[in-house]
Image 1 (tube, rainbow, N blue to C red):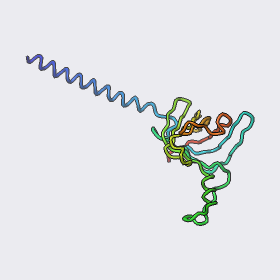
Image 2 (image 1 turned 45 degrees about the vertical axis):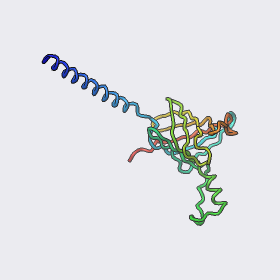
Image 3 (image 1 turned 120 degrees about the vertical axis):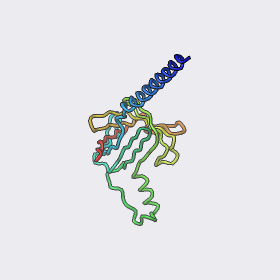
Image 4 (image 1 turned 90 degrees about the vertical axis):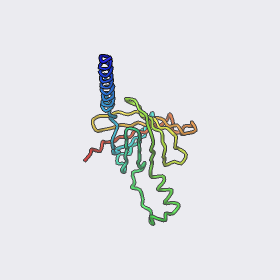
Length: 179
């Protein structure tokens, strides 16, 4: 009986240690697969590309792409001109509101990715009704440079924009280093 008691307590100890080792190994191996897109990226150029034409926005206003392990956010201005401030910040005119709306693009939400494809799903968007919509990108990294090519978009109702299949938008970003 004493032998059985010693054997069973040793067995419990071995089982417990093995479980702990496997648990810590699985936790540490997850840390080794850090997402290379993770961080803050500054917009340096935008290209609208079709089969025979490319339009450039070479000196864009401030634009950011932020990505965490589970969320993304992108905000940028599609114009070269500086965004015009409201004359009265707390009481803009209808024309100022329209101009402000047209001069900014943003989406935020969740994403999935492979080694070269990023699919975003908006839960907050500039355009009312786009929450739940998806944007499809290919991406490539070179040191601290990111090329993000949006090649498709699907609205929450399954429809596509008129530009789908005709235009792609290539965003070029530079990594913002931690201070």
